[in-house]
Length: 262
Image (cartoon, rainbow, N blue to C red; front, side):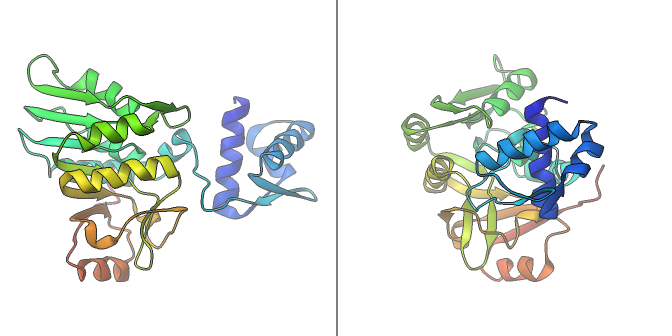
């Protein structure tokens, strides 16, 4: 396993369990005690974990965003189900914005049978996928915003994508989000990504949030928008019923995808 991939897996384990021991790392990845200690020391220097005797504990604040690759491997079936349900909201001839995210990527995977779409995105992974699945010569138009590339996310941030999004008014925006809570609304990890999401809320006729159930009741670093600004939330059937009901009472359409889908 590559060094960085192993460290990302260590961070994921700590995020889920709160702690990890040296021996656990050795057993999980088949590495030496020295390698395990070196990994934890490096993560500690970066401020991502806090070293303790025999291992490490979580030191991840609300601004820590797990890498795209790490997130894409989590809750896969839920995200696929959400992507399929969300794509049912897209009709031939629609203009849509696809935000960066592992769940919006699943929406993009379900567009192959759509016709006469205009798709605007600041996500290189989504753009690359659509180049291979949509007939761009005849049946679809793909607009890539440009901008500064975030290496681990392959999203484009900065003034360029913000200005591009401001110049277009799409029928629907599909927006990924870091957290959904009744108290703090929609929040995100990264400030620059948050700014782009705010523009999507301003310049799209219909705002559709796609988020798996692990995002409910969570508040991350930066405010994006109040819950009342959302038209539809597409999530999975494991979403907490009391939160789903409370969100519906705000006049928001909530669509539950079957989380057991394979």
